[in-house]
Length: 110
Image: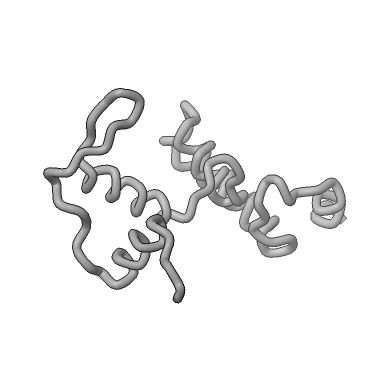
């Protein structure tokens, strides 16, 4: 008999588009009570974005950089950054930062 782990049950429910947990159930996190539904929505939202903040792809890192930069609101700044990376993506690909190596830069300059 195959048993499903509790964490997989939650994701199975979301995948089947069934309802999330009721709001009256609480989850304690670092001494603070949260509605279980609120926590569930945060977790689902995190996995739906597909962004791994600890190991982003170059395109994701660019968006983070632009959003955090004081010049990020300037059209020219954004276009210059996007154009530079677009050329890199065309030749090398949209790598995760941890996968980026010296030879990728040499190939791009090449």
